[in-house]
Image (cartoon, rainbow, N blue to C red; front, side, top):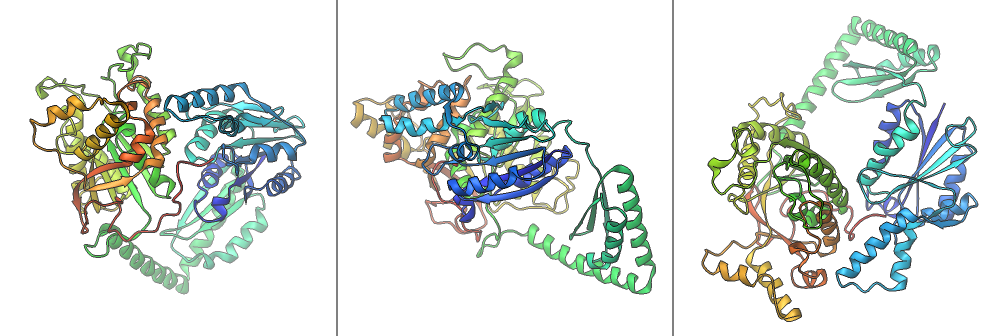
Length: 595
């Protein structure tokens, strides 16, 4: 039977700056294929430590799949390729596929005016020097491939093993597991175990003697007992043995409940559980306090109209908060099917293929930013129409307001964000879907916080009511940003693409300045990668890249937001969207990504 091990690599994990989310997720995927995960080790960015861990896993029973996570970036502490190669007695070789991507990345850096020295190029090139004898595992999403090394016939052979080296960035790690590792290395290898789950209302210690008897009679069944409301017994293994073990547990529960002491114990435990549940629901339904804010981990939800909006509005903010340990969730309301090809260097796209193409572009942009979770609601794109009456029937902007609002409200209850970012009342510009995005978001917030409203017919809607403490609208070009970049370009080049724009603004009411300014200059690279992922929409030589990034970081290293609603007092301009909320402190405050 194939077994698996995981080696998680990174000083930042052992230092508590980031949490390992890859291993628990991978354990679930392995279990779905019937493959036991027998070890998870976390080791520092150190050649000897990685060698020790890999040597230990290779000595365990085979066939074995050993997966590493992290340490394959370009910084000096990224040592996984070197460590694995040395541990296996192999050299490093240049991979042409990764090398081509690195060459493109260097050319892009030069196009921004960055001085690319030989030493700079050498360090980036380390990402393409992989252990000899490796094969690449490609994913449909993400930049970095996986690397697999077969030993003694690989994990398909009885005495073999396969070492798989994966990036540590969760979005790239998961895409490689789903797109390459599951179909190539996991599917069909082991019998999938039968699982039985039994809920009950006793403290788990009351079943200890039943569990002892279960393990004596059915040693091939894996037993798990989990606290909760209700309590849960989980059994997995061969079907016949699991069925027999489940019968034994149910009989034990029945016999316990039939005794006077057991009945009183069940009643007392139910009362205790009920009090805890009521207290939890009171806390969840009233998350905000006007003086103390919300207690808990930071959770931020962006609501966008189309694929590509997540890249042009708040992408660097999302990347920063993700790197600081917050959960950042993306909801995209429409499918983008009405979009045109706006990039003159992109190939033409048939209208019936546009939604699919833009969905793939969105996946690449999401991988670049690293969102915790994403939801695509897939409503039909309305297209741009100056006359709202011209929007076709059935499109997003013509739907009854509560139809998409209820769905979004269910997701808000599921994700429980303290902060939501949407669009201003005018949409930021008069696209019907942008205006509707604002309307849908504000209505969804009302629905989500109503404890009397049943949303159980929507995904997540069965969760308790939830009030979002702070709501913002993104603003791309407030006057302060426009003027700062315009003046900087005049000083640098003597001309600016914003000249006519500013002249037109003289005849209009002044646009509002942001209520929050999040400093994100170090994360512009992630924003730009997300923009470039939208090949049909973004011209890499066009408007979005007119301003040199060093100038932008110097003159306006911010993304701005208008405050639409807050349950706490604010001091403008806020440097943090979570300002005023009593939340967990950031677990990471580094720059632009993980290796």
